[in-house]
Image 1 (tube, rainbow, N blue to C red):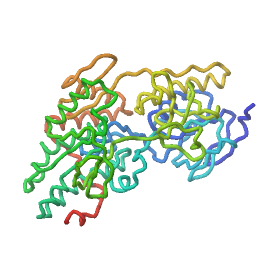
Image 2: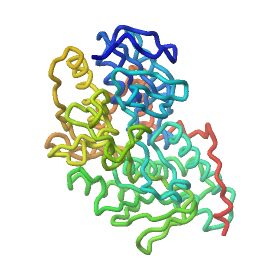
Image 3: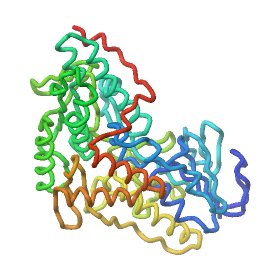
Image 4: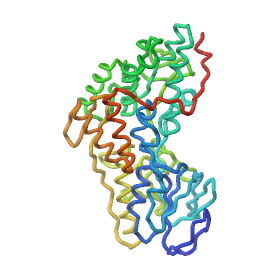
Length: 440
């Protein structure tokens, strides 16, 4: 029998007779769950190391100057406005202690009756520390701002050198990974090369800038239909992107990209988009709890195996099914659907009613490759081109949190489309790197 009245009074969270549900992570899953638990007889504590929710599908547009970061971020406290018994704390969770039903954070400890892990995912370098040290990631707003600064700083540096090889390396971009992130970023960079660089850098031969996308598999956009994969490749090649398939990157020392083949790149900007893994937490990282990809094993109710009071949703959760033996795709839709259902199930659990098992409703996949170019696989329908591009824009606008964010993004897209411009190409926070190695 759970004693809801006995709890640790830390973080200035008041004691309550209601059961305390602690949610770690303010991503798609955590926010969906928090909204679903509004007006329920529970105390909800949402913890995140940032005070905002990030709309990750549009991070690449922040990296390439199409959007400012505040247009894809939404204050988490604003999500909870008007909800009774809801609390947000800016904290990084360092450990979970299931035996004492307590979590440890950088601002103190907190007890829970039920814990929901919605920490999402992080970049997976597959153990290659050299690449991890030198390559750029794009999983957060700070990382996207760093990448934006690096891209612009490389062109500024290219203006200052008379060395032919150094200039080419500074303008050579290598994107590792041919999934939606890599494809969309490659398309955006190709449009910058075509429409913006000649105007911004008239005294630089920007025609020599190269955008390379390197995919270890035999096709782009794995998981999409073969038709969408082929069309995305055609779109990229039309934009001047060099597509390398069946090539596995093995190293990058900050200057030279090596592969398992004879292919070698000299580049000052390598963006790693080749995979993600679950962002696990100490205390829930034992071998019997983790599945492949560093994800927590959960049952059909999103309960972590062996811990009935701990749930996991979204990218961190691995719910193996017949259709998805490795768990559901690490994208927004499973997180949103799991968060909503878990909100209903938690009420059922507290009322001693049977919970409803999770069944994923796959609404399809889509990716944009630039102006008027996108591919969509939606519930058996496959289409590409300008209509798919409009569908992609509508869906992304719909899932953005906040009316202001939708309006700002829409106005930016309209402006960029009409003017063929990207106004946010600003070096707000410099990302300085050592360019001396490119002078050899």
